[in-house]
Image (cartoon, rainbow, N blue to C red; front, side, top):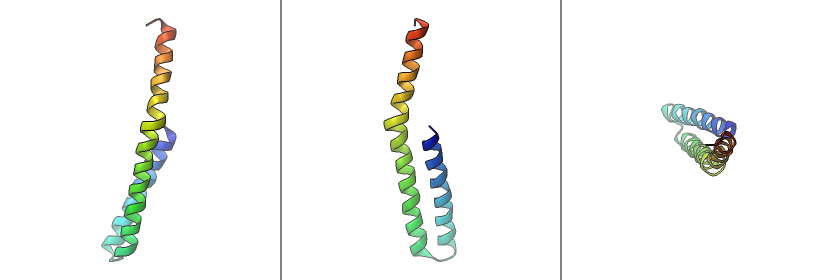
Length: 69
């Protein structure tokens, strides 16, 4: 979960940087930063769906078995 939050925060930071580069007229650097921000968001999504979600379901399932539900 922490990795997902960190990558999402990094993606937001880089996308804001990309926007500021576009506003100042540095289109190449802004485009590069926008792609890098999108990559960070993509990794965040993959980490959340491939790692965090299944582990959370396993943890909650184990707790439900221990409670007798």
